[in-house]
Image (tube, rainbow, N blue to C red):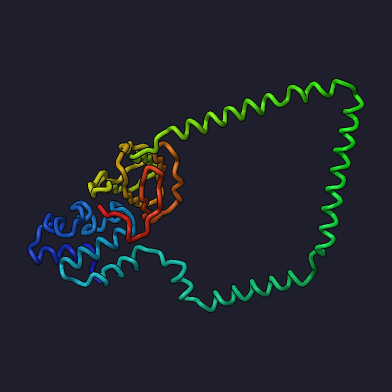
Length: 270
């Protein structure tokens, strides 16, 4: 089959369409369209976006988008685990059968201890502990008045800690709830970032950042975020948000209370 990029480029040139017209119609940035035509896949933000861009570009030109996407998957994507299982179902069944057989063999060799025996052992341990506590308490009483001195001074520390906790709770109740979310991102490796605010304004327009490159702090009532992968550290209003390692795109809804993961169809596209 011809190359994916040359197929798209030749179809566009036959139709005498400039690449800026494709950008306006599909909302795909011109630099990504040129990267597809030149098959410079490393300049694109992740495999999922590549397939989506190829499909939209081909549909706009009126050519078979499905065959181009399938060709991309065959050439540049590794088959998923589910596809490998579909190719070799017999091997999966053999493995599952072996695991079940092994479990029965191990379980048949011996039995667990009776419950009454375990309960009896726990009661014996508790009785021994109580006896030791009573013995130590009797020794302290025989030493005279010296044992009463710590008892008189010890409660001061818990009282002080209690006052500090109550004061902290009062401060927290008085503090007003934040009305804006402040998003701070730090790239740990190359990462694609697309960010919109609650009104649909594009705050970060699908930019690729490298490790150590500064990403501007963004503030809004709420935001929607798409990352090309998990190569980023995130803080919302100063609180760290866990970002799971991932080589695929991920998305988050950002609010003053924190970040919530978004599904594939909910992520914004720049």
